[in-house]
Image 1 (cartoon, rainbow, N blue to C red):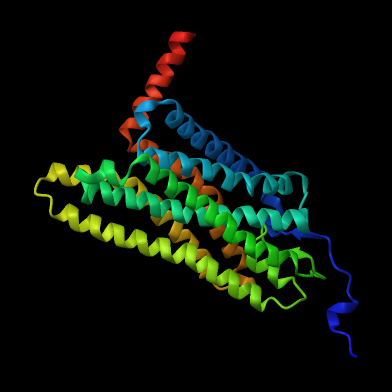
Image 2 (image 1 turned 90 degrees about the horizontal axis):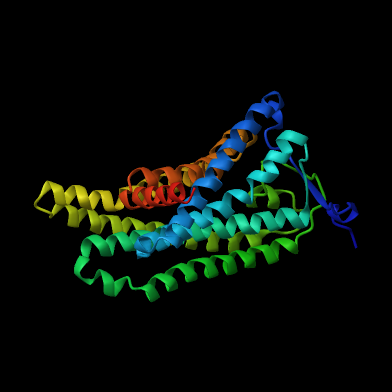
Length: 315
């Protein structure tokens, strides 16, 4: 019986992440920029989580979801950026197959969780504006915990199915991934076994966790906009807009960069552009989220002022 072409090849045990090696002269500048962005992201999101956890005035649904969201952003960017920084500074661009698949698992799980958390936050805005008299009933503590916990658990379980199938693949060369982290499409392109079933399952699960929340967010904001237009006073309209403006900005940034990345052509000439778009939702969006939620949020400002004044008194 004839042997398949890949059966005579040796299975590879590590990948090479090419990253931005085509512009290696800029490695130091890129390292400095990404390190500063990473430190700002982790510091800003950690500060928001701590302010919400230790300030009882912020123990309301909106800030409960915001704390979950900020915690997610810390894990999301920490899963990718440290490896990229090591590659830029020390040229450590190799990664084992197991570590690569693990990185993709956390990336896929956290990205999917972010979609569901954004949908839950849009529902919170919808109830606050469209059903203000029923808000405390519809968004009680139990409902918030169920929405957040189901977002985390369901996405990690769904992504686990894809990872199990990925671990069953055989990679036999070449072992170069033209990206700065382990993404799904570059991985399956290196497989020398049949990936049709896995691609179908991955497409179905990713469509479910991206499209369904997006439709829910769109429906929520359609109802919110209709409700705001019915408010007779300008002050009431401004207050309603300020309630959901930060969330709407984050949704626009996240889905905008995600759509631009995965709808862009995947041919080689546009691969560098694909990596640039990936930087937007892996580094820039998590960095700007604390800024967006802090600049327009009076409660966060007051909590930070109380924390700083208390620290000054203690000193």
